[in-house]
Length: 254
Image 1 (cartoon, helix red, strand yellow):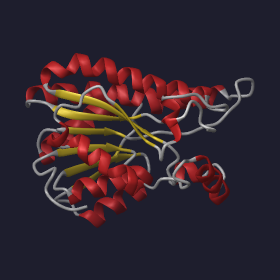
Image 2 (tube, helix red, strand yellow):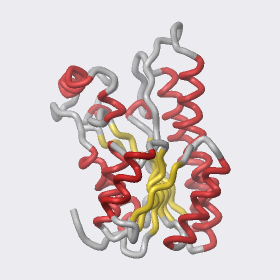
Image 3 (cartoon, rainbow, N blue to C red):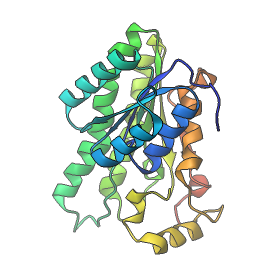
């Protein structure tokens, strides 16, 4: 994938240092965007920015649950590259836990990163986008934002919340030409998912997918390019699954 589909666009990608986020960053730069890589993983984020070059990508240490950090990130990006026109709210954490055993600290972390983070991101970029004629906000939900699965009550709650916030924001911001959509990946092979079982988890997940494989960041990034580009100018408030067919049935297990 290479070209100029995002020429003139300025993007913020949260969780952009590794995994799915790094794939989105690379795809955005390849299509002509300038990108602020926002993440708590400083070494990985800076290495990616150095690789891509400061003229098209910079790294910003960023806590998505901190409103002041959001205000600074948007201001710095506006000043360096011009007004932000794409926000990829990609940062997320995954914690499994049965209802009776779920650690409250994990519950609070899931809320702060997966739910509060995208809310604060939308709030932070809305003014810039409104002043400059519009933009595209892409919120990362999950297949667990479309259907339930045992062991993901807390995680799924945050991903359903992202789905709901997206639809409300699409109505609220749409009159200002700001489009808001949610992306719902299934099992994607990233450091976040691999920590929960490694190769064995990937093999198990692949067996549950109609395509009989797990996804990779390269499978997800093109959707983020499309939603960030003017090609999707009439898509607003949508929820798009990118899961190999998992949610084509009534339950994850088929």
